[in-house]
Length: 258
Image 1 (cartoon, rainbow, N blue to C red):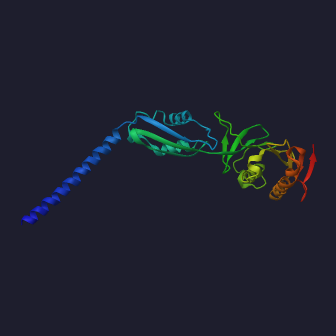
Image 2 (cartoon, one colour):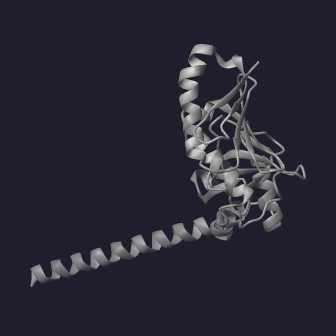
Image 3 (cartoon, rainbow, N blue to C red):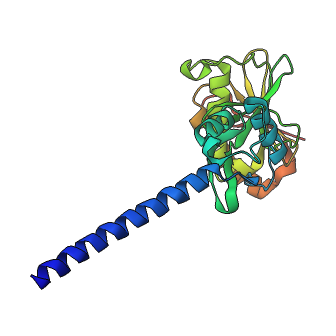
């Protein structure tokens, strides 16, 4: 009999403890929901060169414009992190955004920027960037990215350009990808120029040369021929000996010396 009473008291004790813990958790949740935020902390992952296309001020401006009020001093229960992330991801400079309640009642916002890889200046003199996935990005008022630049007879941007293999923007993006993926050409090339006949010219950073690619045909072969030429002829003659390097003729590299 005594053992049964003891077991019953133990069960009641455990039940009481569980109820007490439940009450404490509920009180903590209620307190957290009514506790007000004291700050908004924004962390922006820098571009590879350490610069930024948007600032913390831009982030606060976007949120204030979308929500109509500041995130500071509002109950934590009213902080809509999903909406914050959605608003920020709509910005063309933002690749990803994560919002959550951090320590010390702070709204923490982490932002990853899109990285521009090629700048387009079209025939209407409108300027913008492409990121590595071909997404269009505007130029930034805070920083001008020093990336491969394409100029000349480039038509205005159209969203479906990636679906059209013969579209000049598609060809430019494809050429840019090839140059950026190559250990020799990536640090070497500065500009792509497209003339009225849709012939492509590369302009390197060094040597003050023009590299004539011609029509966008057999580009991989032309770039490989150019690499062979650089490895052999340039190694012997030097960068500044040639005014033009012409790759327009199949299987040939035609040069003009200074």
